[in-house]
Image (cartoon, rainbow, N blue to C red; front, side, top):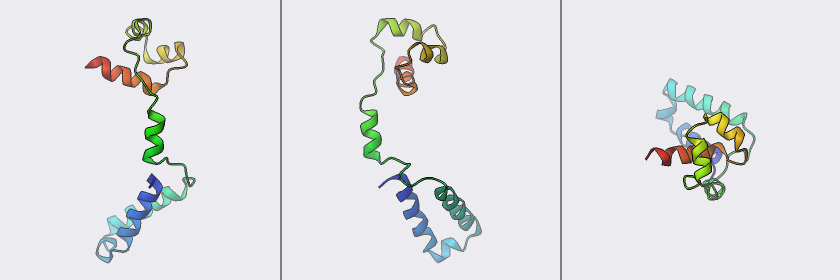
Amino acid sequence: MNFRESMEFLLNQIESNESMIADSKVKKSCNMVRGFLNHIPIGSFNTSEQIAKSQKNLRDFCNDEEKMADFNVLSKDEFLNSYSYISETEYNLTRMKHRL
């Protein structure tokens, strides 16, 4: 089940519950979320399996002395521009691990 399917399931459950949908805030919230989902192309949200697969190859670079030397001197933007093959996610993983 992807994000869109999960949201539609929850909306259907809420909207089929007469006591919940009677609450004006709940009804407005459901309408807002439906409006959001109607503007998002079907299939634009990945399943948890797809996300896990895409993140499997992400690694920090804490053991790379050259990169870490630059990492400690350059700003995030400067670093990512210098190492264009490193993703922002990999940079953030390194930042989190480096702080520990």
